[in-house]
Image (cartoon, rainbow, N blue to C red; front, top):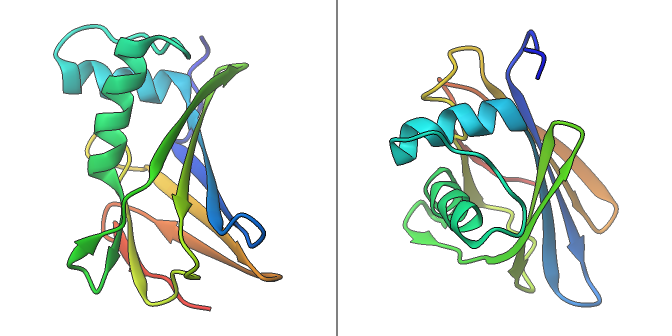
Length: 147
């Protein structure tokens, strides 16, 4: 695996009004994920989509570092859908069933921020034709979502 010159994740959040669910996909570089998770689990970690052990470990990590808060107090639960590997990128899929647009909620995206000083996490948010982007970094791991 070739080392890439930057550390970045991209998250796309799209509201599906018909099903009243936020569809969320996270694009993570496989080498960054495996390096971070190796430190978290205390042994060499290999991401294998569909493998219960690696998916569960990743889900636990994700639920600690990718969270929604209503008023910074109550965490919004989400459903784990699964993962997929495409050319050194791990796609992670989750859903939030809600009729809310999440405006006013706080999003924490601190994925890999402890591992890489230059890590940035971009979140692209789409609701009823409106689009917004947010940039998360070490000094700004939590942001309020707005319309």
